[in-house]
Image (cartoon, rainbow, N blue to C red; front, side, top):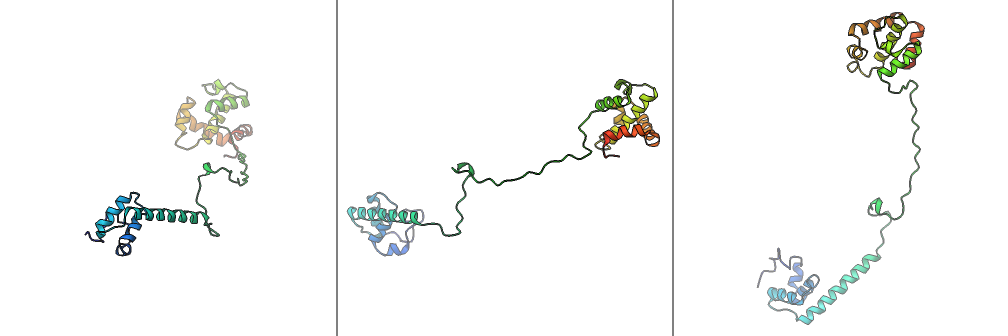
Length: 212
């Protein structure tokens, strides 16, 4: 007869030792809870005790075990959650009734007073040329007419002040976009700061907004 304590990895691994020592009938009743074949239950009991209930008795034990399971299920179905119990989480997409939506007033986005749309060098040249009543081609060219030179000086000042960073739009980079050398751009910026007319400063302020 095998030892009642060596049940690891066997059909009797889940049976309490007290049930084993209670005799073959109690042992067979425990096997009846999860083994469907009466013959298997009888063989396992014979191996353990050398005697076992008859097949008919084992079938009665199985019917009794089934009744106990049904009774347990019925009892569980009638249990209500206690007060304060948190219900299990459900995926929102699987809920039949829509979840209540909390009203939310999004803050209105207000543009800053100095907001200016993104403009290219050609856009600034065309706009400033219109203010000075000259041609954009003249501003971007080599014309030495005074009005064109003042318009070009104003354009250089605006582009330089509206640059995103000193490295992205250096004087050399601005000169390349206007077909001018670095020294010409530097001279134009200096002359604008020193001697720009009120009209030139007013035109520049229109494109710079609150910027200096």
